Image (cartoon, rainbow, N blue to C red; front, side, top):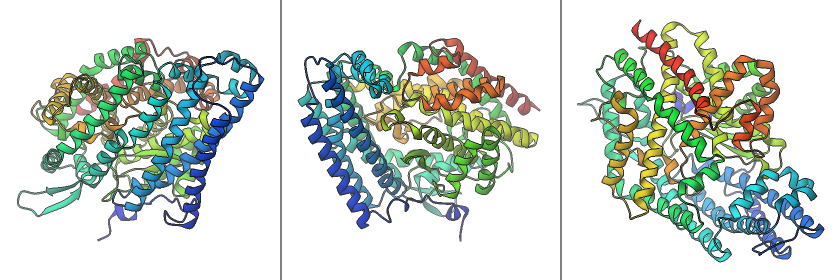
Amino acid sequence: METQTDTLPRWDVSTLFSGLDSPAFSTAATDHAKSIDELTLLFDQMQIGYADKIDVDTDVVERYETVMRAVGDVLEESITMRGYIYSFVSTDSRNDLAAARLSDLQNRMVTFSVLTTRFDHWIGAMDVEALIAQSELAREHAFQLRQAKIRAAHLMSPVEEELAASMTVSGGSAWAKLHGTLSSQLMVEFQEQENGPVETLPMSAVRNLAHHKDRDVRRRAYEAELDAWQKNGVSFAAALNGVKGEVSTLAERRGWQSALDAALFNHGIEQQTLDAMLEAATESFPDFRRYMDAKAKILGVEKLAWYDLFAPVVEGGKEWSYDEATSFILTQFGSYSPRMKKLAQRAFDEDWIDAGPRPGKRDGAFCMRLRDEESRILSNFKPSYSGLNTLAHELGHAYHGYVLADRKPLLRQYPMTLAETASIFCETIVRKAALDAVDEQEQINILESSLTGACQVVVDITSRYLFEKATFEGRSERELSITELNDLMVDAQRQTYGDGLRDDALHPYMWAVKTHYYSTSRSYYNFPYMFGLLFGLGLYAQYVEDEEKFKQGYDNLLNSTGVESAADLAARFGIDIRSKAFWQSSLDMIRADIDQFEALANA
């Protein structure tokens, strides 16, 4: 029987190549390898690498400009190649050809990584301010150059850096690949009813049952999920220990005080900003517990269990079909600007979106840039408001990439803290409009969906931060067992959810669920999402205050996310991200939603 999942669109990447086994793709892969070889030769000819001191003269300026342009060209080529290959890997983890092509690319990118490290060494040996003064191209990349100067101070010797880059393919990246492959291929035995048939479902489908209206089905799915993670716990624990061990070792060898210090630099914020945000978040936990208690009241239970977190609160709530969702998004994006609507229309018309869940496809959602103005969006769409919200969110990422398309390649790269700026803004536009377009019952549903997301991003992500911090501390001494990882996870959930959830129904294996823990290049991958939500809400508040003034500066802000720090960009809108007061004001918007939800729940 055909289901909605079968009819949902899949992304189209055939505009690039007809397939991974096509002659055109083989030629492109060969050309990409040749480009990296030629870049290596250029670095050698230009003597780009480690030096004690370099005086900035005309020759150095010319060498810098030649190399920068070449690096940018190879970077763009690499992003397109990775996007094309990953479009197959992420939707079918059993595709052996795609896995082989990804491995080929990763091996080539080791060389590129070594070259960028050589470039940082070279920049670190010179007065970057003198370079900026003498070169228009350097002035355009001033922020990036100053960041490179700091990175250079935290580099090991050239030989050690080259070895570290070479080893990551069989080290941290291999562990991350193992986690991604296992988790996407994980099949779960599930029995919906006590005496019903046993089905074998992909993990993504079982996790989607957390949204089921029947509490018994949710409980059974939760128990089946935990059982599947437990059975594969040895592999996931080995992967996590491998990744965290590599990150800790390299952070120490590079002179960072901790992996967190390195992450703060990579994410573009300071410890003071993180502390202010986390302190404001912690103070908001009692409000989130009010929300959880109100939801428990609607569901008719004394206290929420973990498997109730995503439960629908309205019987027979509105089903947003995929077509309804796309139409609504287009209307609301158009209410903000024709440019934003045009981008969304292109995404739908040109099949940028792979919408439905299926075996072998990874869980969750993401947006990746493919080339120029084009992105591709993966989701696991459900016919509900949350499915609509996810689409709006990921299209916000695509809009960010669209706005950045006129920038030079290196200036399109931005830190994770700023990556959620457009996505949060876009989903907030859609949510506010949806609340005005539905009846009171559906308002409860939309508010609940929004608050579920906010609870995940503020409460759950704080738990993930606490878990990751404790894991790094423990892993610096030795490998951590499955039991220890489970205990750390549950302890972090108790510290954050508190009495909002039943203590005997938490999720000890959330460390195995979240792919974010398994990135060697993006440790502490989680707290930037909180930054993004609260920063986006703060910007939305300014939009409401003065729409025209906001519109004049917003696209320019998105266009500048690769050329200024988060603090400097925020200052454009009069925001001080180092102050707890700003984060409290953003959380006040969520508190207002909690108040409204409580009132509706009591009614």
